[in-house]
Image 1 (tube, rainbow, N blue to C red):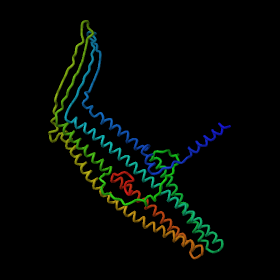
Image 2: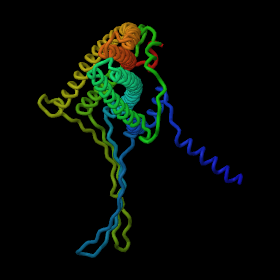
Image 3: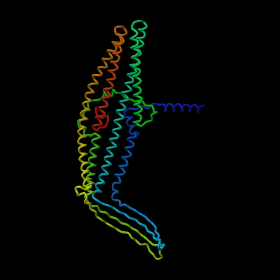
Image 4: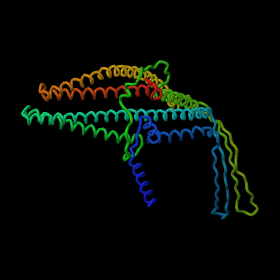
Length: 419
């Protein structure tokens, strides 16, 4: 009997574990995404490939090796000949050194690209997390509003049956209730759809039940935002700075490879032997060294000269793009800082607005019960209260999102500003 009871206990425990809901804080959601997000995983593959290439950059000094063997038969004499070959060749030019430098720069650029991809995903996760919090709280407000509208409808029904209010008041209360129920259903659908997208973003199964632990009231605990002393740059600027370095090295590689000599070294060992009595193996191999000097690059209208000019144009284009990005970054910082300041002030005003709307609704509801206010007045007060609460939550989300965007723009870890 005891083993049976133990088995039942194990089954019950397993069922509870399988049915358990995963609780995610914003930091836990980020951690999950960085471990499972497809974009992050794909970017890691590309980064690892660049790492392997950078680690083997020295292989430009490894000679190219070829080996072969064969047999031939003369149709005139029926004599067979056997041969083999082993050869090695190596080309050296000043461009080789620059090529190694470029491989290393490509790897550094890949590191920045990977860091940017991680930052992009983290920003998306954090904003999506608080979007869901907003939608969840908005749905909760809608549910409370529906409950209030249902209560108003029931009160109006009692009054109408008692002959205290006209039938049109009852119809108005019913229409309001049905409209609010539709709005609640739309809010729930939006929350469900965005939750599915969020699960995909952080890389968890769609069937896994999750709940989010957090509140938009986190915005109320934010301190002053001060960018003094912050020297970090945005991911976009960091990427363009490295791209400019790569473009400059590529320009040097192009010029050097087309306007400097190339030293070629080679060795070939080619033993051969005929199928004739007394014949010995003979070596027809060779050693060679040569220097070639391309002159097309010095001719103004040659394709090589145009290639060099195109490389210079790429550098200039990268310089202009970087300069514009730096201006854009500065403007974005200023815009976000102003948005944060406006949002903080707006939250204070809208908090007072909620307090006022709550008081007005309570007074209007009391007056309606005593017959001194009609149903439309009560509905207006209810709508104003909901609007005030939604407006406050929306402004709290705006502040949180703006701080996240500013942290991304200045290149500091998320959670740094205002803490």
